Length: 82
Image 1: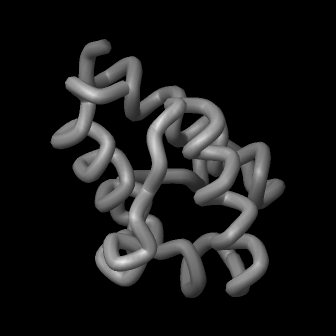
Image 2 (image 1 turned 30 degrees about the vertical axis):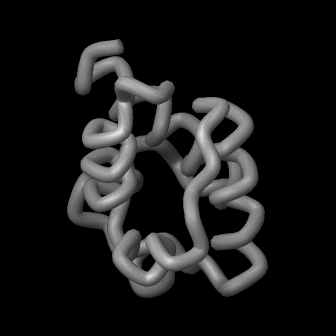
Protein backbone atom coordinates (compact mmCIF):
# COMPACT_ATOMS: atom_id res chain seq x y z
CA UNK A 1 0.00 0.00 0.00
CA UNK A 2 1.37 3.40 -0.95
CA UNK A 3 1.99 6.09 1.64
CA UNK A 4 -0.54 8.48 0.09
CA UNK A 5 -3.33 5.90 0.17
CA UNK A 6 -2.40 4.93 3.72
CA UNK A 7 -2.51 8.60 4.78
CA UNK A 8 -5.95 9.07 3.19
CA UNK A 9 -7.29 6.01 5.00
CA UNK A 10 -5.79 7.12 8.33
CA UNK A 11 -7.27 10.61 7.99
CA UNK A 12 -10.69 9.20 7.07
CA UNK A 13 -10.72 6.97 10.17
CA UNK A 14 -9.61 9.85 12.40
CA UNK A 15 -12.30 12.12 10.96
CA UNK A 16 -15.00 9.49 11.53
CA UNK A 17 -13.94 8.55 15.07
CA UNK A 18 -13.37 12.10 16.31
CA UNK A 19 -16.28 13.62 14.38
CA UNK A 20 -14.18 16.36 12.80
CA UNK A 21 -14.16 17.45 9.15
CA UNK A 22 -11.47 15.77 7.07
CA UNK A 23 -9.96 19.15 6.13
CA UNK A 24 -9.02 19.63 9.82
CA UNK A 25 -7.17 16.30 9.90
CA UNK A 26 -3.77 17.49 8.70
CA UNK A 27 -0.40 15.83 9.28
CA UNK A 28 0.47 18.51 11.84
CA UNK A 29 -2.82 18.27 13.77
CA UNK A 30 -2.31 17.27 17.41
CA UNK A 31 -5.06 14.94 18.59
CA UNK A 32 -5.78 16.59 21.94
CA UNK A 33 -5.06 20.26 21.26
CA UNK A 34 -6.15 20.62 17.62
CA UNK A 35 -8.76 17.90 17.17
CA UNK A 36 -10.29 17.98 20.66
CA UNK A 37 -9.67 14.32 21.49
CA UNK A 38 -9.78 13.11 25.08
CA UNK A 39 -8.30 9.90 26.46
CA UNK A 40 -11.39 7.84 25.59
CA UNK A 41 -11.31 9.21 22.03
CA UNK A 42 -7.67 8.13 21.73
CA UNK A 43 -8.52 4.59 22.85
CA UNK A 44 -11.41 4.43 20.36
CA UNK A 45 -9.16 5.84 17.64
CA UNK A 46 -6.43 3.26 18.25
CA UNK A 47 -9.03 0.47 18.18
CA UNK A 48 -10.48 1.79 14.90
CA UNK A 49 -7.01 2.06 13.33
CA UNK A 50 -6.10 -1.44 14.49
CA UNK A 51 -9.29 -2.76 12.90
CA UNK A 52 -8.84 -0.76 9.67
CA UNK A 53 -5.24 -1.87 9.17
CA UNK A 54 -5.36 -5.24 10.96
CA UNK A 55 -2.29 -4.24 12.95
CA UNK A 56 -1.91 -4.02 16.73
CA UNK A 57 -0.40 -0.80 18.05
CA UNK A 58 1.70 -1.61 21.14
CA UNK A 59 0.85 0.45 24.22
CA UNK A 60 4.45 1.63 24.52
CA UNK A 61 4.11 3.29 21.09
CA UNK A 62 1.04 5.36 21.98
CA UNK A 63 2.93 8.14 23.75
CA UNK A 64 4.87 8.85 20.55
CA UNK A 65 1.72 9.17 18.42
CA UNK A 66 0.63 12.73 19.19
CA UNK A 67 -0.13 13.97 15.69
CA UNK A 68 -1.84 12.63 12.60
CA UNK A 69 1.55 12.59 10.87
CA UNK A 70 2.99 10.48 13.70
CA UNK A 71 0.33 7.84 13.07
CA UNK A 72 0.91 7.90 9.31
CA UNK A 73 4.68 7.58 9.83
CA UNK A 74 4.23 4.75 12.34
CA UNK A 75 1.97 2.78 10.02
CA UNK A 76 4.20 3.51 7.02
CA UNK A 77 7.20 2.12 8.88
CA UNK A 78 5.18 -1.01 9.68
CA UNK A 79 3.41 -1.31 6.33
CA UNK A 80 5.06 -4.62 5.49
CA UNK A 81 2.89 -6.15 8.21
CA UNK A 82 -0.30 -4.37 7.08
